Length: 228
Image (cartoon, rainbow, N blue to C red; front, side, top):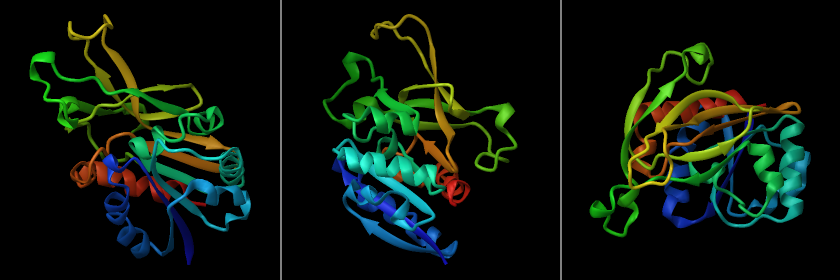
């Protein structure tokens, strides 16, 4: 039986417990024994973690230098790492070593027109498209999937060319924002790190978004693809 480690916590706005519970039955049905931790400090064990897969849902928060370096070593040794939304792309903001590992950092999620805001999370729920790239169509994570529409947070991420991008999303340039042209960002990407694999799915702000059939498929396939 393969071993999966679920690390969850951080900002409660992303419902880390409910979100990860959504996928634990899938992991168990796929032949994994699932262990749950509520602190990233478990990563300090590095390659001695003795798992095949890490599923992280830990938005913001802090991780010690030892934990981050342990995570880097674990992935380099072949342990797969995956997650969604801020649980992986907005974790441990103070650590450039973590950012270097994951390859993409949440920068913002543009909002509605100022006349339409209400001061809550829905101010950032915008209709947008996740575009599966034709050149990535044969990748196991996106094979057979088509571009799709969501109304939720649209992540603007800062990234680098070591990422293999499978899907993108394009932010428009409405006149109430300071940028002057549309900006396309990765929405789903993978990354090789030593002997390990990383996959990031940026949709997933709330449980209902994770229950979208295509988003859920992306997350589940990412778990299997990165696993040692």
